Image 1 (cartoon, rainbow over the protein chains, first blue to last red):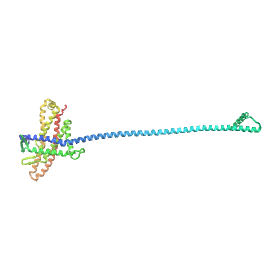
Image 2 (cartoon, each protein chain N blue to C red):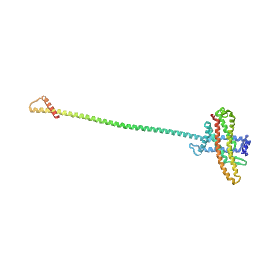
Image 3 (cartoon, one colour):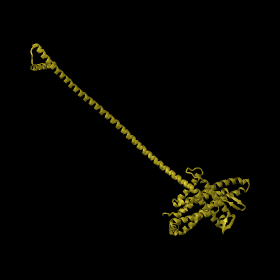
Image 4 (tube, each protein chain N blue to C red):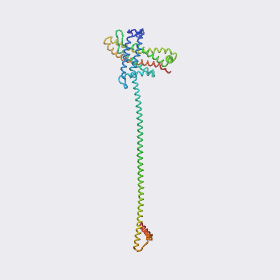
Length: 172
Length: 239
């Protein structure tokens, strides 16, 4: 019934159609300028910002990881270095100790040798001076005893042999 | 419907005053609502900006589901305005109906076929125009009228008219029927005093709630189908 009425109404509102066309076009343009543009631009900005933030966060995370790995390596390296330093020092100390001990030993032995040599020398000197004095004394005694001038050089061999005999007697 | 409409002639064109007033009012509401929602947009959205962005996302998804290409990019703003406009127009008649004497001056503009058919015409003409613009006339013609088989040409030709008619009449029929039943329930409510008034009120509230639902669904359906038609005309189907 109603549809018949609609079809039967011989007035087609062409003016309305034109009005709708124009006003709808104006509405779309106005919305686009005043609302759609700013809001979608803001939405796009937000999407870009979020994407950028995610990217930078990812970068920062990677950087931090790299830094941590680097730190770990550095720590390991310095620990190794410390161990080598300590062991080096230990070795050096040992070497030094050994060297000091060796030097002391050689010093001591050389000192001993020179001391022995000195002692020997002194003994010899003492013996020589005693020999001379004994020879002089004996000659003077003999001169006084036998009142006779004896030639020192003639008797010297005799005295020397005597003193030699004395030395061996003492050592024995 | 069926009632006499207040009309006047201007430049040889017939104008329906009811439609002019209703359409203008709904368009003003649409524009200022969107304008109010979109003031001072911020990177960190809050309040009404969230509402607007939710609607924009909603209509963008409708467009993308059938037009995931450059054509769809340009259709977004149209789909958005179309959706809000039809939605408000559908709900408008549920809230305001102004009658003076024999004439209704304010009602849902979508309850009149002239608006729905004009909107349908805009979308269909645009679909054909975009089809020619993106595919070239030869390919457009072959894709539209001669496929899948050449002998289906008459059927395809008729289909162009039926899709135009159904797009407009579906919206019109739903909203008009809703308003008509609303008026019938109202006249029933006032027919026999208190006895019919109370059940009338209850029925009216229930039917209004249902009409809100219908109006929302029809706005969605209209925008979706318009985008589907555009995609049919602009995208070559691979067989």
